[in-house]
Every structure is written in structure tokens, then in C-alpha cells.
Length: 142
Length: 423
Image (cartoon, rainbow over all chains, first blue to last red; front, side):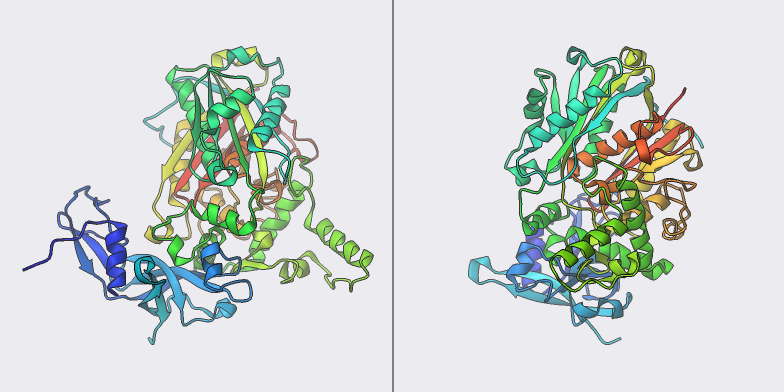
């Protein structure tokens, strides 16, 4: 018996992340795919979507190393002396997403290559009811 | 260039413009700053402003909710300047709030439902510590899909810069020249938050070190200074402090009138002949990170409505929230070809005495960026320049056409206005 389709909401997207799956939406009317998922297709305006799984493999499109950190990242221990990387990744199928970046040196941003291969990783934060999963991409072997 | 299917059914003029001092004012609220800007505008109305003639008020403000704990600000500032019970509307489109408020004022007059409109913008940002300001500005991004990735506003534009550098070969030094130019202009703007050239800033730092008996900095040139990690620290690689517009308190106001009422206020109205606005998705949803599509569309629509081309524009105030944003703006507005804008500050093309002066006010970088005020303050600058009232930073000669370009978020909103002086 198949399980009912989850609604096309941020909550459902995050629930899939907690299950270590990076899921996109696909329009059953025109075939367009969207990441993050959409409830209404931006191309043909149909509200007839389905969930599709992505491979999680991609390439770095843009990035930065952040030294003036927001409160949430300061709480994770980041600061000017301990900067972190964030960026935009293009997946194999052309979909793009914003995510943390791991496996590169935040203190040597000049050495990071746009186009570097990366693989999705799922970072757990917090405990119990407060637990969330954040999407990250780690530098991968070519 | 073909005319847009949408044109302004009535002539519209800007008949007054003014702004508060921009800076950090612990003892002032957004409301206080709005009053200052209103009074400055009122003084600039040549034949005087009878407040009874104002029909409506539009106020650009990004987040007095978070910055001051005060929402619903339109009737409050309308009351503060004595204009109740006119319809008062707050407009929010992040850093484009002011420019979009201007467009709302234009549409109110164009619709025939108003003849004379007060357009203002304000933001009071310095009450919060930097980390909380960073959080508040990040609320203009996508808090579901961008903020969890750790993006901050400098971070977004830094990511744009890394994509642009890779594609076109720009270096961080090209961006430093944009900051140098804007400070050279801002030094001549008495309302600017940082009315100082970078050279004078350096001198001040050397003097301060001398007075404290500390070792003197070794900078020989402005480039030495801008490469110094202590003096110009990294904010989000490759953007440093001097690549980023500051945190600012300030307000600006404009008085708009239907063209057939303009002569009641002034014999030198500046006509508003084109307006364009567009929206766009989050940064990761864009095909090309080296352009702001919404800004290109907004510009195209404004040019079509005005019946002019980018070459016709004599001066422009563009949204340099970060130095890279000015580079993209000049390309998106068609002043330079894609990938050719980054050297224009270094080459002097966009200087006050260059072929295409950009940000004679000092831009958001030197003038300051009180978020909701900026789009309105840009129009204040072009109004003064076109009327020959810009003082030491006046661009010489006639300025028949000028443009303002105001962007919200990472280009999720963009709004462009074109102004004309006819006499």
C-alpha cells in the first residue's frame, strides 16, 4: 500500500531532510522540476505536483566564507576567528539550492574552485522535539 | 525603443525633496528622523507647501517592527508631520521599500485619485547590536531556504561576487575602486554618514595612532589601507568592510504633484517620466548569478515608458548596498555591456567628472543605507543635481535625464525611475 503524498510545504521538505533525502517537486502537467519544492508550478501554474528524489551530487556555483556571523551561527561556535562557508550548489539534474559547505577551508576561500564537485550531507541539530536537520554539501572526489 | 503598452496617463512632477542627516543617532527615533526629512523637503519647495494640498502619504520602511518594536508606522509619521487624516500607507519591499513607495505615489497620481502626494522613507537601525541587525537584514532573504544555509546579506552579494569574478575575471581591487569613488563623492555631501574620502579616513587613523603613542600604520596608498585586514576586515569573502554599505539611521521625503498642479509649488519641477518594477526568485533559483533580472526588467519598462535609452541618462543613483551591486546595476541598466562594468570606477567613467556619473551622493556606501529611506534619498539626489543645487558635488552642465535604481533583497524586488528636466 502506498503512503499518501506529503503536502508541498517547507515542513515536508524538512521532514525528508531528517530522513536524509533531498527531495524536489515535479509538475505532473508540464514536467518542470523545482528545488526547493513548489505547491504551484511556476512554469504552467498547475497545482498537480509529485515528489521526486535527487541524487544529492552536484557542483559549486557560488560561495562565500562568512566572518561576521548571525546569531544562530554564533551559537554553533562560529566567529571571525572561526568562519564558515555557505553557497549555492547545482545538482546533476540542473536544480540549485542554498546550503552550508563542508570539506573546504573557510580560511582559504581564494583556493575554492567554482565547479568543484560536492555531495549532500544532512546535519542534525538539537534534541528531541527541537531537533532539526540542515542541508550541507561536502567537497567530493571528482 | 518601442513604447510600453503602459504609459503614464498624467504628467507627474517632483516639486520638493529633502532628507535628514544620515548617521547613528542614539537619541532619535524613526519618527523624529521622518519629521526632519519632511521639514527639509518643505524648505525646498520654492513657493512653499500648504499641507492642506497633500492628498495621500506613502512611507517606505523595511522593519521598524524589528528595529524599533514599532509596526503600523504610516499613520504615526503622518500624524507627526500633521497630515492626518489622509490615507497613509506603509510600503515594504526590503531595501526597495523607498523606491516602491515612490512608485505607489506615482500610481496614485496617475490613477487620478490624488493630485499631490507625500512620499517618504525611513529606517532607524543603530538601536540594535550588529548581530541582531545582521539577523534583521537576513529576514529580507528566504528564511525557509536561504537563512538555514547560513546566508547573511553580505554573504549573498559575496556569492554573487564569486560567480562574477569567475566569469569575467574581476578582482577585489576593482571593487575597492567603487568604494574609493563613492567616498570621494560622499565627502562632498553634508548629509552623508561618512562624508570623508578614504584618504582622509586613513589620515585620521594615523593621527589617532600618533596621539595614543601607538605604532603608526605603514599604509602608503589607499590600496594598502583597503588590503589591511585590521583596517578593512573581511565581512563575507571577498567583501570587506569598505565593500559594504553601513548601518544607518535616516529619512528622506519627496513631494509629488500632478504636472498640471506643479507650478503651484515651483517653476522648476523635475518630471517623473518613467517607472518600472519587477520581482524575482531567491538567488539559488536564478539562471545567472551575474545579473539581477528584476533590475533589468524594471529598467527596460522604465526606459520604454519614458521613451529614452540608457545612453540618454546623464547621471544615475544606483543601489550599491555592496560594491558588487553597483557593478551589476550599471550593466543591468544598460550603461555598460555585461562583464564590462567592473573596471568603470577605476577608469573614472563613473566618477563625478566621468562620462557616466554614478552615485554622486556618495551612494549607499558613503551616504549611508537606512533601508526604507534609500530609494527616496536617491530621488532627492537626482532632484538636487538636476536643479543645480548639489553644491560642491554638482555635476556641471545640463542634466536633462537622470535615473534611480533601487533593489530589495538580492534583487527579488527592483524598481527604476526616470526623471526629466525640461527647461
